Image 1 (cartoon, rainbow, N blue to C red):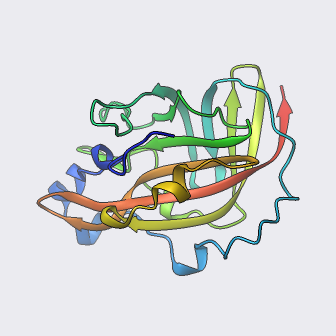
Image 2: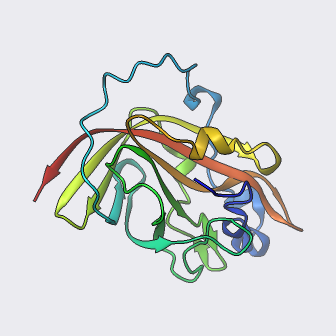
Length: 203
């Protein structure tokens, strides 16, 4: 995936925190306990891959996410484009890459807040290992993913290969902004959820 390390900078202005006060309204951040264990190479728990089908909606029941998905491309600088900031309950997926449920790494991104308040992935940092993410697909199927880890990275240390690199099973990354906050530049990093396919259903 040819995505630059500045992928989600546009997500991270933090306009609401600037207006309201970061101390009171900062979104939750993942604890060290939610980080990934060292990779053992054990992929037996992954479900069989699904065929190509664009995603239309993402649901994360434990943090009350239920949002439509739009296609995202790359900016001229090579970073991932973002959904319109005014659309609080809208996320996007990288449509030149893997569709959620296919073998490989599918990418979903969304805002943590906008000038009016919390947005679609405001509570993403509160997600726990073992949590469920569901992605409705255009073919009528729903891909079901289990959360493997929730991590936060400063922008200067963002691990491109770990987040965007190829996978041998169906995997999903869900990304928003997070980490430290500056009134001058906004959020200083990103929250990233790592998940893998555990099943699917139709209807």
